[in-house]
Amino acid sequence: MNKTQPLYAHSLALLTDLYQLTMAYGYWKSGTANKNAVFHLFYRKNPFEGGYAIAAGLQAAVEVLDDFHFSDDDVDYLGTLNGNNGKPLFEAEFLGELRSMKFTCDIDAVPEGTIVFPHEPLVRVRGPIVQCQILETFLLNVINFQTLIATRAARICDAAGDDPVLEFGLRRAQGINGGLSASRAAYIGGCAATSNVLAGRLYDIPVKGTHAHSWVMSFDDELTAFEAYADAMPNNCVFLVDTYDTIEGVKKAIQVGNTLRERGFEMVGIRLDSGDLAWLSRQARQLLDEAGFPNAAVVASNDLDEKLIKDLKQQGAQINVWGVGTKLATAFDQPALGGVYKLAAVKEPGGQWEPRIKLSEQSIKTSNPGTLQVRRFQHQGLFTADVIYDEEIGITDANRMVDPMDATRQMSLPQETAQEDLLIPVFRAGERVYELPEIHAIRERTRTQLAACHPGIRRFTNPHRYPVGLEHELYELKTRLIQKARGK
Image 1 (cartoon, helix red, strand yellow):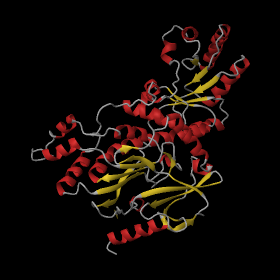
Image 2: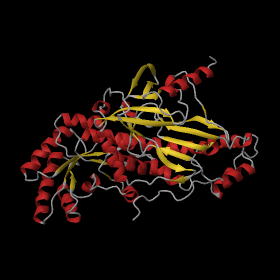
Image 3: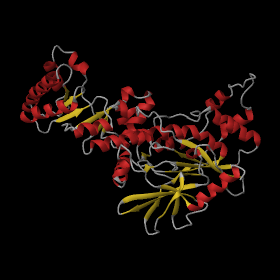
């Protein structure tokens, strides 16, 4: 079985906003289509008021870019679009250019499972400006959502500690693709399994699940329902015990668990899906232990998130496994990461790279110019700081970096500090040069990255701000461009 089967087998070139195509047409019409450009995909604020994000979604992007093209049907459809005057929006000659267009960009990206921070490029696209522009919406779509969900999963798994977290969100997810992408990203973020069977097949994620309240309600009484389920699936018995009376449900599960044991099987556990989970789990644990089922798990669900899980643990809840659905698969309280895709440099054929900058009245929205890379420094097993630098300039000033939001905050890092560049080559001239890792390796990367991150950055309330700065020469370049743009 192919462990990473592509979800789509047809062109997704039209998975973009119309204005990307109108700009592409404008470049072609103005004779600037052969100009090269550099764009960066990044976000400005950490999600969930947290201290970090977990990069995800690169595999989905790579699988589409491996065969990126406009099909005949795509181009024929674009030919039907009209402007306000009722005439075709695009000239036939331009549509012919799209039909024959071959993807030739260079793409560098942060590997999935990497911990990342605001303003750092997660993806860098360099190539013909028309192609770079067309890719914007698609890349933001896949990277924004999966990064958001992987981050939420990492936070939830952090709260759960050594307890496994199961992703149960498909029924509440945002459509088919949203459900599949959420299951994949949740596993990358640290979840142990998913209830989503198609995601299990497509992405090689472990799947878990037993029965719902409807199973119990379809029988005349709860005991009969548990017995019937045990007869049908004796090797998969986690009994949902709160359909009627939770404590009585636990007692009936124990009764059926004894019958299972006589047949040579073990009850896996019980699940709580309502009520006071802290108190009920303690009562359930006591009953299970006294009945000789110390290894039976107490599984909890019911609109859980990282803060509720942490709170339940502080209350002494006796829960072994956490089933998290809606608030994980939908990101619930933060529906979007807010990632953006900004032009940072242009080059005429045969010319030199010219940095570009976008200004704003809000300093957080002023972009960083140049062909950017991120260098991460590490000391004694912990990440200490990230420096954003321009590859055309390099790092020139003893690793001196400047906080882009506050120029008075500067720091220097010694050259002997362990360091690595985060963006790695994925495509060169449109050809893939990156071997996609297995999802289990990506999940393990998330774990090791979080372990190398100071606990203060991972805390849920008022996390410590990880140092990310601009290399000094890049900061000076940015300042000069801002002054020039403002006529100073």
